[in-house]
Image 1: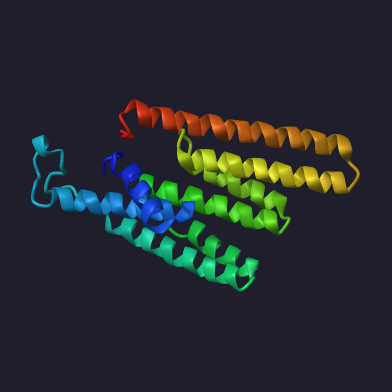
Image 2: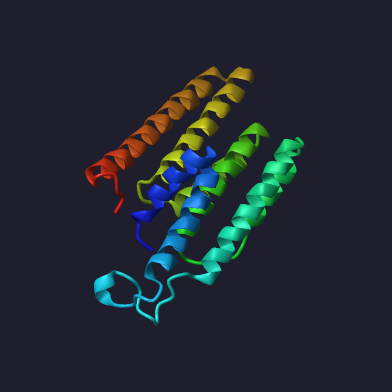
Length: 208
C-alpha cells in the first residue's frame, strides 16, 4: 500500500463530498487499499512495484475494520442528529474498543475516532476523559501527520475548556496557565501541519 495514494484519495474526498476529517480518513484509507488491489491485480513481480502472488494486496481484516468504522461513525452521526451525545460516544467507544489489525490505515482511522470522542467529551464537560482519548489517539499517530496535528489541536481545545471552567470557579491563576497551555498546543498543531504541507510540497505534492 503506497503512501502516495492516501493524500490524493483524501483530496478527492474533500472535493467530491465535503467530508468531515473522519470521513476523509475512512475514504482515503479505503481508496488506498482498493487502488493497491486494482493496480496490482495479476502483476506480481519486483519490477512492477506490486506484491508477489504470496502477498495479499488487500487485507480482509483491514477492509472489515474500515467498514465497521464507517458504520459506527454513521451511527454516531445519527445519535448526534437526535441530540443524544452519550449514544454517539458509545458508538465511537465500540469502534475504539474493536479488535484492530495492524495497518497504517487503521491507525489513521482510530486516531481520528479518538479526536472525535475527545470533542464529544469536551461538549459533555468530561475533560479528564477527553484527555485520555487524546493520549490514546496520539499513541496511534506518533509521526508528524494531519492526524497527529488534529489530535494536538483537540488537546488545545481541552485546555481551552479547562481554562474556562477554572475561570468560572474563580481559580484565575490556574485558568491563565491552562489558557497558555491551550495556545501552546494550538501552536504545536500549526507546526505539525506546516511540516506535513512542506513535506508534501517538497515531494511535488506527493506524500511518499
